[in-house]
Image 1 (cartoon, rainbow, N blue to C red):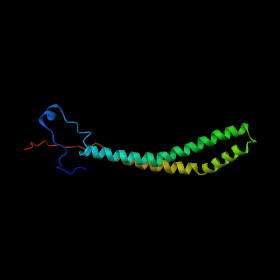
Image 2 (image 1 turned 90 degrees about the horizontal axis):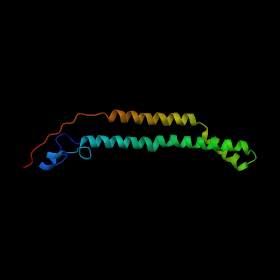
Image 3 (image 1 turned 30 degrees about the vertical axis):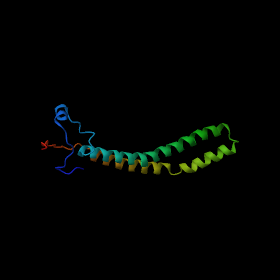
Image 4 (image 1 turned 90 degrees about the vertical axis):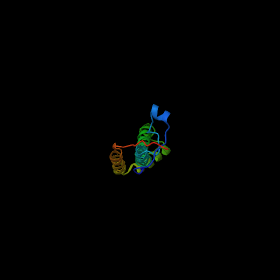
Length: 127
């Protein structure tokens, strides 16, 4: 965060006459706050949501192959794949609950951190 009293930009009279866009300015506190929220969301998605998707992927593969195995019960290779995926599914409910809990913790942190904060900017004439 930018300490109080820090300069976030120097603008000429023509820019001030039009308007100044503060949202893309990396020196502003709101930019830093948004960046922190982005990083938290990235962590949530890259770690916990990705793990949830991987659990769902294994479940879908198992279901699809198990349906196929019903029509080809003599296929040993297919049975082996279904059995391997069934082993991976052991404890899926607990793992999903853990991933969801950790993702929700980060989401709650995001919603705590992303609250608007009043900002005060002072324009000073440069000599």
